[in-house]
Amino acid sequence: MTNSLCIRNATVVLPDQLQETDVLVEDGIISAIGRGLPNGKETLDASGLILFPGLIDPQVHFREPGNTHKEDLHTGSKAAAAGGITSFLDMPNNNPAVINAERMAAKKQRAAEQCVVNYGFFVGATPENLAEINSVPNVCGIKVFMGSSTGDLLVHREEDLERIFANGSRLIAVHAESERQIRDNTALLQGCKDVKAHPKIRDEATALEATELAVRLSLQYKRRLHILHLTTEEETLLLRRLPRDHKISTEVCPQHFTLTAPDCYEKLGTLAQMNPPLRSPRHGKALWQALKDDIINCIATDHAPHTLEEKDAPYGKAPSGMPGVETSLPLLLTRHSQGDCSLVEIAKWMSEAPARLYRMKNKGRIQVGYDADLTLVDAQLKRTVENGKLFTKVNWSPYAGMELTGWPVRTIVHGQTVFVDGQIQHGIRGKEIQFMEE
Ligand code: DOR
Image (cartoon, rainbow, N blue to C red; front, top):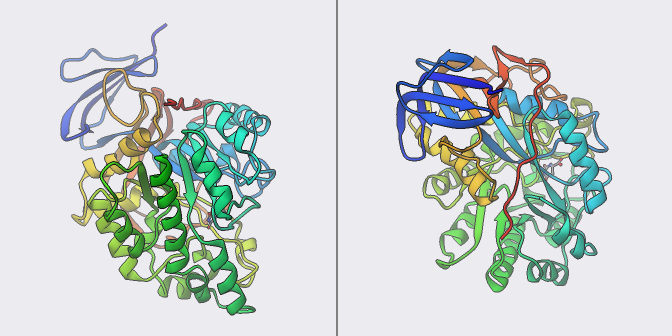
C-alpha cells in the first residue's frame, strides 16, 4: 500500500533557487514537485514555511557503545531530529573504539534498533588496522585522529599516516592537530588550571602543522581527504592555495564562528573547551568568509556531549567537547535573518555538500527520485536556547540564553514525520545511509 504525503505551498529550497510549490512523497521517495499535485494520504499546508532537503550532520559523537551516560544512538538521533537533521555521520571514538568489522556490525545493529533518523558511520584508524579500514562494509570514511582527543584513537607518526593514505581509495577524514605540538605545549603549560590555556596548548600552529601534513599526503597519493572542523585563518589560507585537481574538502562547526575566545572561556569555563579549540574573532571571520567562498564546503556540529558533572572538573581534567545538533540549523538561520547568507547556501552547506562529498545515495536535494528526507522550517520563529529543555541526554548547550531566529518545526525521514510540535513521534526509525564506493 502506498504511503503518501503532500506538502503544499512551502517555499522549497531547490539546488539553485527558492520556489513556492508543492512536493509529493510516495513510499518514502519524492515522487513529484509542482503545482496541481493530488492530495496524499496526509496533506499539509506549509504556507509561510521553508522546506529544506533533510539536513545532514557529517560529524557527531553519539557515544555508543561505552559512554551512554552522556548520549546514545536513540537520544542523539532524537536531538538531531529536533534540530532538523535527518541524517548523521557518527565517529568511532567509542569504548571500545569502532576499528573492525565486528564492532561496526554491532554498532549498525544497535543503530537500526534505536535511531530515529538516518545514520552512517566512520571506521577508526589505528597504526595496525589497514586491512580493516579498507574492507569494513558501507562506511562513510576512515577517521584518523592525528592528535589525541576523547578516546584512545591516535595515528600520529608520519610513516603510519603515509601507509593509510597510500593504500585504498576511501575518504580519509582527519582530526588535524599535531600530537607532537600538543605534547610540547602541554609540558610548557604543565599544571595550568585556567581553561584560557586551551587555545594556547592547541594553538594555531598545532592545527596548521597537521593540516599541512594531511594535505601533502592527499596530494601525493591523490587520495580523498576531508579535514574535519577547521578552526584557523592560517588553514583557510593554505586551502585557498590548493592546486586545481585536489581531492580535499573541509567543514566548519558553527561554534567556531559563533563563540570566540577569550570571552567564551570567561563566560562558559570548561563548557567552551573542545578540540580543536574555540579561538579569537579573526579566525571566526576567516572561517565564515571561507565558507562563503566555497573554500569550506560544509557545516558539521562535532556534537560531543559530556555531562555537566564531568565538565565541572578543573581544566586539565575536564573532557573536551560540546553538544550541537539541536542548534546548528537555528544558528545558521539566525545568520540568514541577519542577511549574512541565503537559504540556498544553508541547504548547500548542510545537505547538498555533505551528501555529495560522502557519496550518499539519493540524498542532499529536493528532487524527484531522491529520499524524502525533509526539514520544514519557520524562518521567523524566535526562541531562546534553554538548558534542561533539550533532547540531548546531557541537556545543556553552550548557547543557553541566546535567542535564535529560525527553527525547524517538522522533520521528515523517508516520508515519515519524526519531529513536530516540539515532540518526537513514537515508533519512527531511520535507515542506514548507503555510500557509493569508487
Ligand atoms: O572536543 C572534542 N570532543 N573533539 C574531538 O575531536 C572529540 C570530541 C569527543 O568525542 O568528545
